[in-house]
Length: 568
Image (cartoon, rainbow, N blue to C red; front, top):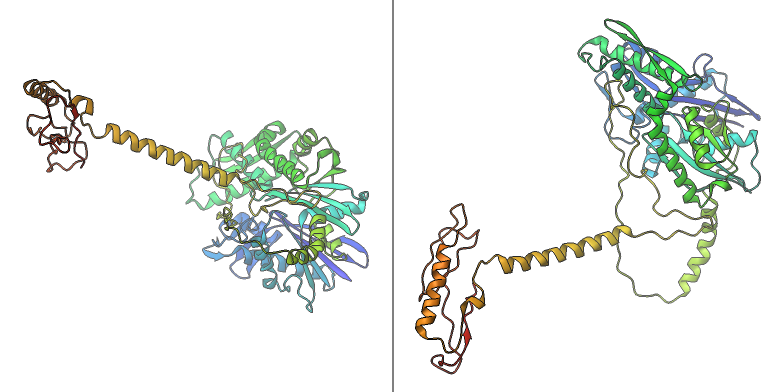
């Protein structure tokens, strides 16, 4: 049996083979086991990937595309020399070249192929990734009767599989995987169960955080040290793209150097002459510290989702090209207090683990899911024997968007000022109901529904208060007490009082803006000023005299009555 494991990373690509029990890395370019995940549109040969594409991109950056794995599933194409290319087509070209390189390295046609992907990817991204295989000449995942047999596994499971060959986990031992690669961050917890490694809980991750963002942070810092000399370059100058591409490459090398040394130097080939910028490790750590804090918080959420305390872990495994940064292990050790382990070649671990999985049965998703799947038929049969209760009203869940974020191709142009800010919001494609360690679903917190009810009550109360205030203050009419006539008052006194009230009303200030109307006397009674908003051509309605008590033609001298304004 011959199997090949392939890790199509955001920054680098690696492949390994398992043949007759021998596990080896595959040379993809000369003697190199790693090739850059770069695509270049050549005028004569079409798409070129890997190391040749990386070299050609220095002279013609507009013809190259990087980090297209991040854009997988984005309907917006990436433009190479004016020609649009989908991220799916670029990944298919890279995968096809990897298979050709494996054949050129003396590898026979594989019987099985395992490809890895980030654990944070949801169904939509996995479906888009499966669409890459037919374009590269491979059958769909799990298709029977076609060679080779293809499987898709998550990167943390592949990395943990390789690690357990060197340091086996004890039975039911728990290993947490911290995978910080070039374009994404993944974290997961795996258990050494009776049938092999299995994921516990729900993996967490951040799609738009990785080593490429650290490169951009160093680039921004270099630009600030040069007083914006890189930002001031003319985009129309053909040399600008070459300068920016070369500077970004220098920033990447400086980032890798700072993992083992205290300082690094970046050479910037400006038009007026080359400039050197020295960067200290503490400066670099200050630039990336907020982003690393975000990864540690996502890592803690992974443990919380699995119902695992940090002291329950056997160890924490560091995987990915950016995991050797010393600040990563320092933060994890201070937060978790558990042993931190790292592979000798963190960029090879995923590909080697994928190759090993070509000989094993598919890993189970979680132990809880397996138990739930076993108990589901019995539960359904028991439920069928129970009386059916009336249906309850359906409450639709709050929709969540899993569509990929549209983002253009990464270019070494001006970037946001350092330090880089951690991405906000929850990780996309996250399952809605995590499971606990005993297989029971945790109760979903309905804070969203409660918040909607609370806001509805507040809005209704505010509307009622506003309507009451408008009824009391908006009319501007005299109150009933000012219109009361008491028994025993002579008609002349009453007329005098009404005349005085009319004089007070006429002398009161009127609304500005031409919104006042003259008082129209009616039987000596005052009229209210026209409220704001009434049409100018419509006069105010005068107050009408009150009606006499029922059954009498006139009000007797000893009666008391109160005038009420007429309703409109």
